[in-house]
Length: 331
Image (cartoon, rainbow, N blue to C red; front, side, top):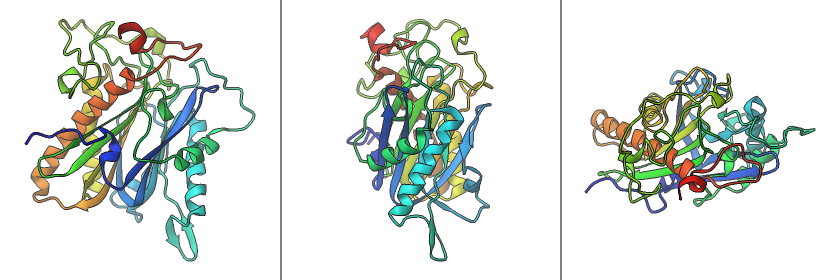
């Protein structure tokens, strides 16, 4: 049987995981949180030149803490890192976190994208991201919105609005894998001026319009409107119920970056902070880890490419947008 999407075609098809979104439409920004029913193993790999992160060093295989409580994707550039504080506060109140004596310290790695120039009101008196982080955690569920939602609320690409995307696959042996991505890229998700997506060869069941591959492929070039240092960044999470250690999680992140390259041209530029986390719940042991990691890596790249296209396809218009939505131009 060929690999197929899970019942929701969301990262939450991986059992034991939930996603929560929170957004502020006046600021035009948001936060997305991946939460596990229990702590999970995680890894990270950065390929962009302008990342912004919190607690990613502890995801190395040689570090003491091997599991995390949640992963956070946020807008707001460096201000958005405070979203993880709101998540950590709420988790601590629930009694969750790494045990140190009689204290609990929630482990909440986070990454941010730059959405400060998208037309929203950024004149806040108090950093809003701690609040948004707590709200996103409280909203965590197996069903969640895509497009103009969560960390993708204020996202843009070279020529269209970006957004939040997700996709999943159930593999031949029953392992489930999913992707979550906030697309805020210097590059473009569509070929030329559109409407065909670069990710079209990997589309399943018309999940981003069913247009198929483009009839011609003009030479892609960066849009001058996005050539601003640190003003971009695509953030992704790959999740699976396979039992992986931190080194294997990191290797899966590396493979998943191929999905960025398949769906966004260009990607991984010095002006993007492109980053991918992996979350592994450990529910399913791999029969043949050496071979199974090859299949998982290919599935991760494919899921990520599909999720990126879905993010752009599902973005919706808002008053004062600086860029059009795909649906406005092509639907």
